[in-house]
Length: 159
Ligand SMILES: CC(C)(COP(=O)(O)OP(=O)(O)OC[C@H]1O[C@@H](n2cnc3c(N)ncnc32)[C@H](O)[C@@H]1OP(=O)(O)O)[C@@H](O)C(=O)NCCC(=O)NCCS
Image (cartoon, rainbow, N blue to C red; front, side):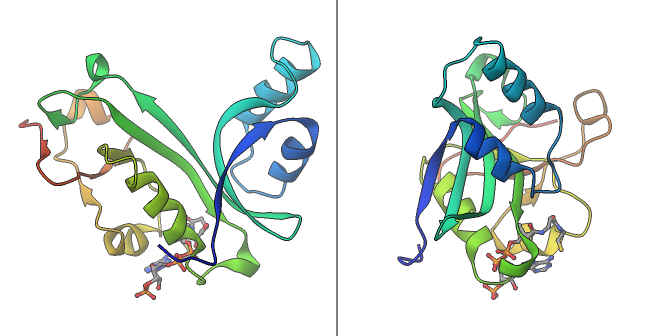
């Protein structure tokens, strides 16, 4: 991993949520975190599922990581805990400087399989990161185009 880049776990507070507004994929997840904060359902500085990279005071890249338990695994053999990665985004001015790669490498460092549902146009990036298309399974993948990455020794579930 690139040493100059530090990936941090992000806390939920008004400051972080304000910084999130600069990302295109700002949506329901962020709005509901804001509501939970406002109505004291969650505490200020609660741990969030987000990891990010700061340059100075600027949050310039982020991703969300969620650990799915083996019970719900429909991708790997044998069924096991895996990470769902989403909302990976690097702000436009900072793209092409390995920040995206640093976040993906960080996700890989947990040594669990990873699943993501990529946005159109980002396939080249995911291919470089060693992700492959999951075999399409209609009932499971309806409306999704899942890509998966597996640590050594893990296999894809047979369809
Ligand atoms: C996709 C995204 C997360 C990549 O992050 P990034 O920090 O710009 O990418 P990196 O600098 O870490 O790139 C790592 C490698 O992937 C390659 N790569 C990055 N984006 C790519 C793309 N869209 N297509 C093909 N290859 C790509 C880089 O050239 C680099 O390869 P190299 O190691 O051989 O030089 C970022 O561009 C982004 O947030 N884009 C907006 C959201 C999106 O998905 N857009 C579609 C892609 S434009």
